[in-house]
Length: 242
Ligand SMILES: C[S@@+](CC[C@H](N)C(=O)[O-])C[C@H]1O[C@@H](n2cnc3c(N)ncnc32)[C@H](O)[C@@H]1O
Image (cartoon, rainbow, N blue to C red; front, top):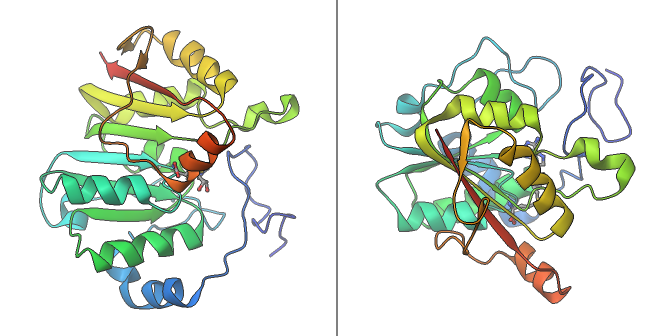
């Protein structure tokens, strides 16, 4: 199968918000991946590329978690720091982490196993595809998009995850009254998010045009620490699905 420079099969035509990085795992990650993947990683049928989703497939959340509970979905969970802390602090809710990066997923699985978490599942997917096809409409309590890749060079901004079409997908899966929480350390991405979601009247902005105090449930991740160290200011935004 021909591969792009980023290691993706050439079948994906649309622009995506990520580039594939090295899939190399360290020893602990490899062990967690081999021994505990089946417990935590949702088995996603693929359409074309390795992180795609068969559009005919629907996630049975009750079967995946073994119960029916309010569901929080994190898009781009990285090493899983935020979602692991939240799942541990809030056992009454279920958490689904969407990520393409294998070492990040393996790290999250390792930590989830060590903490014996039963309310966390992960899916290795291009998140917009799963939001579009695989989650039931109005089935999600909250969607989290924390520190999406900024793609700040002008020629790359089309790769940004937060766009009018992505807002439509978040709207599709959120229940009425459900929350979309976002955070970024790039001022111009924050303005972009406020322009995109602010223009979508299916969402009600909380705070000042969406800008809110730091969300208590969002722990300080190593990623955010680097942003602080570089002197970048963090913006938290929240919108409610009408
Ligand atoms: C800058 S990192 C932030 C990670 C994490 N949210 C944090 O705060 O530490 C963005 C993450 O989003 C993931 N990502 C980007 N686009 C994605 C997509 N379309 N589907 C799933 N994950 C994606 C990347 O692989 C990366 O791990």
